[in-house]
Image: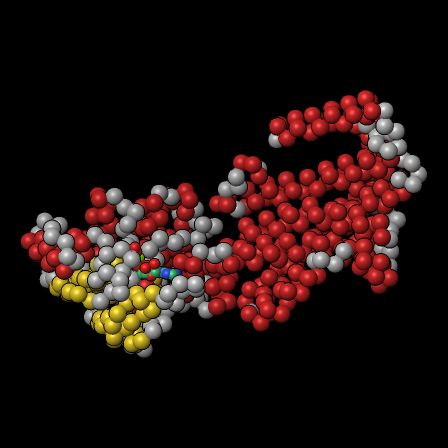
Length: 248
Length: 242
Ligand SMILES: Nc1ncnc2c1ncn2[C@@H]1O[C@H](COP(=O)(O)OP(=O)(O)OP(=O)(O)O)[C@@H](O)[C@H]1O
Ligand SMILES: [Mg+2]
């Protein structure tokens, strides 16, 4: 943690140094001091935008989690679903967000709807893959034990397989949290009038580059906080997974 | 339901992706008497674990027939659920049969008390010693109300002294019921101490090369003439001179 902060401080120092020495226009690249200044003066705008974006993320991730769990269970338990649905899921992930963003805006309007859907779309995939990996990674001997004890298929799933998939699900969720932040920004830029993505989009043409950078800083902080929160949840609730030091 | 395990001319060939099929078992015939403890000994990799999986109905023989009542398996690594504490691990056998969580935990707790593990009820497997883990896996297997239990090297993680204790504990736990036991062990002496009959398997593909019957109650003393004689007989069947 401390080392992480030191690395960030060093990077900021280099950035500041570059801005001073190269004399680059602050409209092209604001220095960390400019960004810090914008963080303070625009704190009202940034705070309310943060609340909007965080709300979209929370909703979108919840939707993604519910759908991902259902999809993963279906794919795991049914070979025909695995063969039919799984390829579609993989293919769906290659559709660039801007392509569908406009369509969603047409369907769902400028409100929270399309943003939640886009966040959910982006977050959904890593969670499904994480859960499926967890389910597939169950120790074969444990499965033998449950079978020799006579547990029917669904009970075996509930008693042995589902808990075994928890660490995978959380790993997927940690990845999802970070990438869905980008999804939220795209969604807000495709149509909307609030959120950090919108702040960035508005700031650039108004030559408020430092404000855009400040919004990015807030976004990164949001993603980092969510990531660390999930890591803490994992260490707390799933202590046997013993996260490696580097991940803590 | 059939009352006891009977293997008739069972052969098993393992199909392997990208490799030649592997002949593991060759025409094995075995019948387990009710209440009997049958030990299987044989060289590493000869197919003992495979034989147990066949007996438990987890694999289908390539040829021959397996007739068996439900058998509870304790696999070689005695696998526990890493996310569950000792009570819930032991309770798995009952929950698999559909017993409610509370009732299953209650009965599992009784067993942990008898095992001298009541202090570790809430410990997860990674907080237990290897020996305790194995005892817990054994308790879990015995808690399954199955007429036969198949134990694959149940004492492998125990030191010499604990093995003797565990053997005593196992026989007393089994003594209360008339369950039969299929016991795989690499310890020839242990087989002679615990079993009513020892079956010796050849290297893979395993055939049945010898059977040694032992009389008297178990566990026998390691130094008893009965055990020493059986040990000689088993070792010579394995082609090792003791
Ligand atoms: N899942 C598997 N896939 C491929 N081969 C396997 C598999 N399981 C076992 N085998 C092979 O089958 C043979 C018999 O294995 P098995 O585990 O039954 O031996 P074993 O007598 O229990 O050995 P050990 O004393 O070392 O436990 C071995 O040659 C092993 O390599
Ligand atoms: Mg084995």
